[in-house]
Image (cartoon, rainbow, N blue to C red):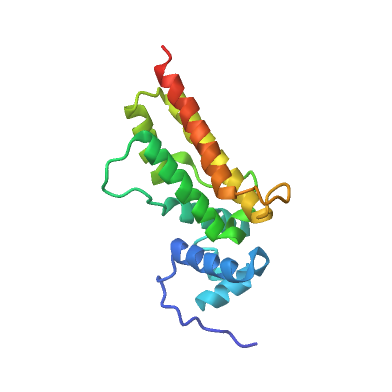
Length: 193
């Protein structure tokens, strides 16, 4: 029995590096391509060394989505209104999901990341509180925007033609319209005493 030695320098393997390699593997070959053995081969390490950075395959699946979302930075230095900020984050979130369909398609209803861990959450919650929303309403608006966006993106991945085959269906228009209605509805609550 021959022992394969790793050509990856000791200590150079990190959780982010494992997750980045997993994203590349899944983007190329779909979720079924992700095995610990294949991932280790991508990284040129032994499969067991992966367990120093991830717990199991589910941790990798969750971690891939979490890493992509945590890296979303759709806002720049420009000052946005809360409505512009929410729209920008939602549009970027949808684009992130649809750019990596195999990473997100298997997530279903699983939580992707905890709100406290990702920058978009902190950014939007600050914007919403500064706009006058109380904490529960700001959290409701964030969750509603997130779920609307995720639902549209996952539906686009599963059925790009739309729920009913129709030349009138435009998923981008429908998404933007639904997002506008959501934003306008919450904006109306600001004016209500």
